[in-house]
Length: 562
Image (cartoon, rainbow, N blue to C red; front, side, top):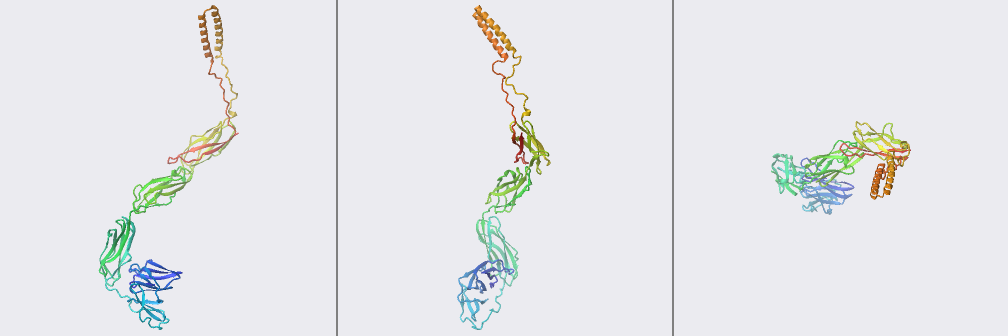
């Protein structure tokens, strides 16, 4: 290890398999160091066994596996930059730096070698007469310079730590970045008078400071100064912290910088995967809260919320994010599971806003038990076997799921030829009790056919036979009259008699039912239900608590006719 003569930096060489060289800033407040400000990888099997800093604090010398090397020291951060080397003809196995002059001393080869430090390049030049005491230092294991190595600072002296400056980072215009805390330390031996602490420079309005410093700071005492960055405009912004005091070099300064960017909204959801308890189809579950957090630097505007996916009708929501959401604030969306089908139900909640990754999609998943379970009633069955002409009856029931109440409408289909199916129009389910109902299928067969075969021609009734008899008598009289008139030789009377006979004949025919419209129709034979097995389908329908039709499965019954 080696320490900067001014107490600003600590340097450490270390390693295993590979060697490294670290530089760390030393706090003038309590002497501690933070993480290294820089680390140099020396490479495989390359290690440091000697480190020393010359009196100006500008150069670090290291004796390493490959020889002696020199590094320049950044006077603000302590970071190291290697100067091409190694140094020629220099060995630093046992070495020491003069604390008050630009000299290094090293013991090797049986003598003490003295080198002058080039203050521009860090190079070493062996001074005339070196080495000294040749042959007298064989076996030496150490080398020191006696006396007070560091002159005490006389009067007040001030430093700001860390001296690397403040970076506010990238912050949206109008927002505040992270606060940086710095220490003003009196490293002198007299009281430090603090006249003012201020911020100046081209963008001073984008930085602010608060401090705990009194008007006087005792020797070795310190106070804190807090810096904050609130950009007033876009782009790179800079300013300078100034501490006016009675120490040399006043005002003490610290560089401030940051970048202002346009406000940008962002969003985070909690929870990322909403959870719904299992409920019954047709009922409504408790509302689950989805928190929409504005995590960006600008206001978040939620344009729309929608539910899509495989089962969008099984979920509903209440959108409370209708107003702009300020950075750091939040709003809520209430999600409700109201399934219209049984089993696993899935959907997607889609949120459209002005965040960069819009629209965002949140998966919704929940499980629903059936609204009711159909089955045979006690002592009932879902199969029946009858002879043609006999009715089949099925005693059934609907057993409700937990919490389900409603009216179930029923329709029946699938009855075979010559059969009909009857079901109640609806059944009501309430209080968790099973709802009973009966399905009846009537069939046609020999047991329901007429006892005699139908006549193809209906017999003529007696009343309708009398006009025919009267017609025959009239025709006889008319024939006799015509012969008499013919013999009398009167043509006019003959024509009159002919017309009268024709009229009488038509009237008689009308009364007797002659001509079209005969009732001699054929009666079709009766229809019998054929033997065989049929499936009778009872289709239930019901509505959910939110007025949506439920997705119900039909009830299948088996009918066998012998």
